[in-house]
Length: 476
Image (cartoon, rainbow, N blue to C red; front, side, top):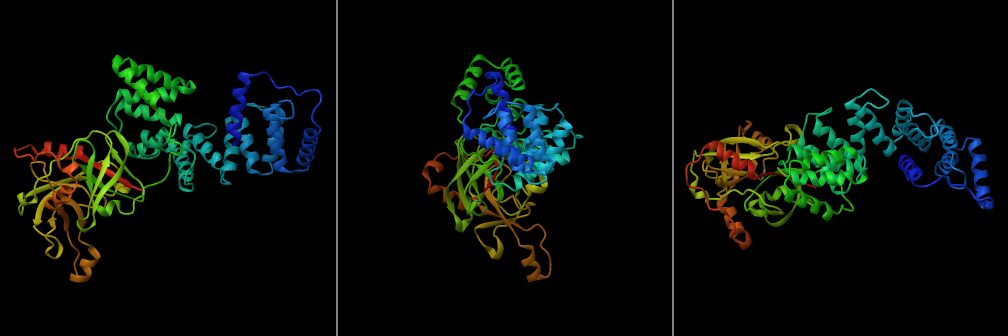
C-alpha cells in the first residue's frame, strides 16, 4: 500500500473509532518484532525505520503515535530511502506527527520522484499544478504527469486525470478538448472521481462534447459519492436547469453505472485516421489500412470518446466498415458515375493530429483525373490537399453526397526517383462505386443508407453536414 493512501485510511479511521489501546499482555512475538525493528532502525536500516513508522501510524502492535511515526519516517528519508521520502512527504502534507508544511512535503515528494517512485511523481505534479509548497509551474507539472504516462502501461488514473485537466484548461499546453477527453474518459469510466468531475464540467459547458445536462448531472453525481463539495455544488446547480424527467434519467444512469475493472487510462494510439458515418445507428467507413492490425478502436466524436469495432474489410479496395453504438448524422452515398472531371469536391478529416490538433479540418479541390496512379480505375485523382490522417475521410460533391473515400497521396520519394521532380498535390480517393459494391454484401447496412441529395445546397451546409458525420479514428 502506498504511503499517502495509508495515511488517508488512518485519517478516516480517526473519525470512525477511538484510539486503539494495546491489551495489557502483548504477544511476545510482536514485542520481539518491534524490538528488532527498533534496533535495526537505530543502526540506520531504512527499511526497518519505514516499517516501524507504519506501525506507529496505524497503531499496529503499538499505541498509535503520529510523532513517533514521523520520527522514524524522517530517519529513513534522511538516508535517501525512497519509501522513507514518500512516508515523510505524506505526513508533512497531512500534518500528522509534524506541523503541516507544504514546502517540506514538496521537497520530499521531489526526492522520491527523482528516484522514479510513481506515487511521488504524481504528487509532485499536483504540487506544481496547484502551487502547493512550490511556485506554480504548469511546465513542471506536465513533465511529471507525462513521465507517469510514458513509462507505465497501466499507470495511476490520477495521472491521466491531471493531464486531461491541463488540456481542458489550457494550462501549460494549448487548450485541447479532444486531447482532454482522451485522457479523462477512461479514467472516469474506471471510477476515478476527479476525472468524473472534470467530465461533468465538459458536458455542462459543451467543451469538446455536445452540451448535455443529463450526462453532466450523472458525472457530477458519481463524483460526489465521497461527499465532494465541488461536485455536489455543480450537480445541484445543474439540477436547476433540468426538467424533472431529465433528473430522473440522470439518476437512473448513475445507478446503472459500473466502473470498468481495467480501464486503460494511458495507452496511446499507435495510429489515427478519419472516418464518416453512413447510417444513423452507427455504421461508419474508413480505410482498411487505417484499422489494419488494430486490437482496439476508439472514436472521438462530438459526444466524447467511444469504442468501435471492425465489421468487415475490403483490403483490395482499401475499405473498412466499422460499428459504434449510438445515434449519429450520416452522409448519403451516390454513384461515382455522377462525378466528372473538374467537379468541385471536399473533405473534412483529421490530418496530423500530433501537430495540427484534434479539431476537424476542411479541404477543398477538384477531381483532377477519373483514374488513379497508372490509370487505376478504382480511384479518382483529386487536387484536394490531404495529409497523413485524412485517410478514410469522405470525399463529398457540391450536393453533400459521398463520391469517394480519401485514401492516399502520391509517394513523393518514389515520384522524385522516377521523374526527378516532387509531386504537387497529387492525391487519390477510392470511388464510391466500389464502396457501394462493398456495402451490398452487408444487407443490414445497405438497406439503411440515406437517399442521395439531388437539390442544390449552400456550400456551407454541405461542409456542415460533412463535419457532423466526420469522426477521428484512433487505433491501438
